[in-house]
Amino acid sequence: MKRELINECRLRFPAISRNEAFSRSAVAAFAVQQDPTVEEVAAIKTAVSEAVTNAIVHGYRDSEGDVDLFMKLFSDGTILIQVKDKGRGIPDIKAAMQPMFTTAPEDEERSGYGFTVMESFMDKVRVRSAVGRGTTVTLEKKLRGKASPKGT
Amino acid sequence: MLKIYNDGGRITAAVSGDIDHHAARELRESLDMIIAYSRPEVLILDLENVGFMDSSGIGLIVGRQKRMREQGGELLVKNARAEINEILKLSGLAAVVADARREPNHTAKNTF
Ligand SMILES: Nc1ncnc2c1ncn2[C@@H]1O[C@H](COP(=O)(O)OP(=O)(O)OP(=O)(O)O)[C@@H](O)[C@H]1O
Ligand SMILES: [Mg+2]
Image (cartoon, rainbow over all chains, first blue to last red):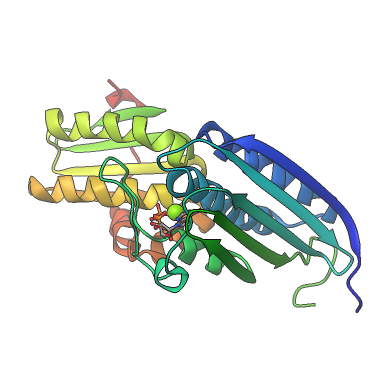
């Protein structure tokens, strides 16, 4: 099936921790039009929370800035979400995505499982990053929704 | 938010709200106070009223587990919803959930 864009939304907010809850609620509200299951909503919220938290905790670790959140919905039921920061960037993306890899400062209790969680809850996770320029995480998931029979 | 049930030696901390990076710091401080001052043998985190948790919760649980073990105690997690259990499993915390299955549910009369 040819995949056509049916809706999109852009949000920009400052990289402060209260926006973690806001951003995942916003994505859930956007996804509702696709009639997703409870599990699908939980998966999207968790993945977005991971990416936005990373932008705040790591991207803007020693600085301030904005996080951009793009959401797109396609005719085949796919939701595509991009979380973008203009922070410090990731020197080695492959290493960063390994379970238990973390560079968090000591006053933060990070476990290094954020990317692992994103990968387990979404169909696709792509990361683009440049040191000193920023990071974009792209998350994709096909929403089968409540209406369609299981496994289709 | 935390509600504490004390069964002498076994303390249940019932968490409510979301466990994310924003909420984790306050939860950490409260739980560490309980661990340090009440010195329970078992600390049980009851997640029945937690609607959301991300990897910030893993850091929170692993950190408290470390403290409990340092003083010879144990940390367990119970009543977590399916997707939270999935996160716990991913991060190798399945045992803290499995062991909590034999824990009885607390009674309100033990609240302090
Ligand atoms: N937006 C970002 N900007 C800069 N570095 C990042 C960004 N996102 C991730 N990283 C790097 O990738 C590492 C792994 O991220 P991941 O989310 O898997 O773990 P964590 O954030 O360290 O811990 P957790 O998410 O389990 O609390 C981070 O420690 C950090 O070094
Ligand atoms: Mg993370």
